[in-house]
Length: 150
Image 1: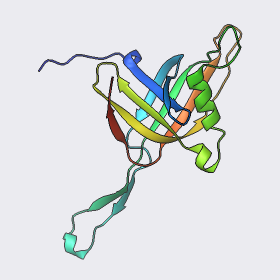
Image 2 (image 1 turned 60 degrees about the vertical axis):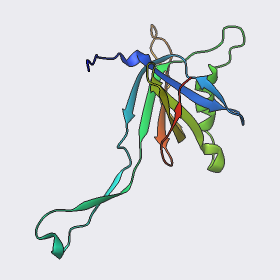
Image 3 (image 1 turned 45 degrees about the vertical axis):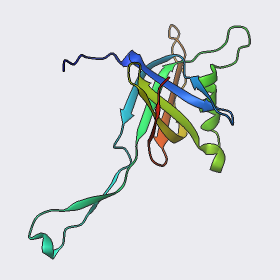
């Protein structure tokens, strides 16, 4: 099987909006970082029976994403891009209102990775001749699931 290099811009990120939910694209992204091993907890399990060999078990799995891009707003209404706005709102939530969902995949993949998430707003800003910056730090909460891509 021949393989090829893939471009980072081919990844798609969508956030769940509303109770139904409606999967809404996050616009304006310029980069992302995916860390599937973030928040893992490895516990040493070496004992006398290990005969001098190190042993461990993993008692917790986690994952994180960092999304970065340009701040996008609707020219007519001045409102933020719906995907960015949904993550901004989630980053302000408390308790049950702090948990949402995101799904992502490479454009040719046949299934989405679906995460329940918490979010933390990243930096906004820019210089005189820069586009406005937007970023979000996302942590997976619970197990990763998969669903077929349309």
